[in-house]
Image 1 (cartoon, rainbow, N blue to C red):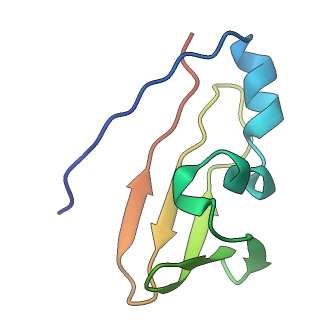
Image 2 (image 1 turned 90 degrees about the vertical axis):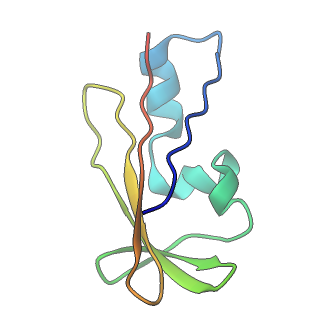
Amino acid sequence: MLAARTYSISIDRNWQALYEAIWRPEIFPKWASGLTESDLRRGGTGWIADGPEGPVTIRFTPHNDYGVMDHVVETEDGREVQVVSQEVV
């Protein structure tokens, strides 16, 4: 099992407006550090990106009323990494 890491930042903006601006998968590479090196493209069961060890599949939580932006990254060998992200007031 991988170690859990927690990161927190504060953004001076209404949380709902922020969520609406950044929740779309195609926007993630603009702000998500793990995806900034690759374009996302639709494919199979999610979105495909080029990871450091080959292609990865990313499945995103659908748009919701709670500011949840979780996603699961599946590596080429089938390992999955859960990434939890939520806008908190």
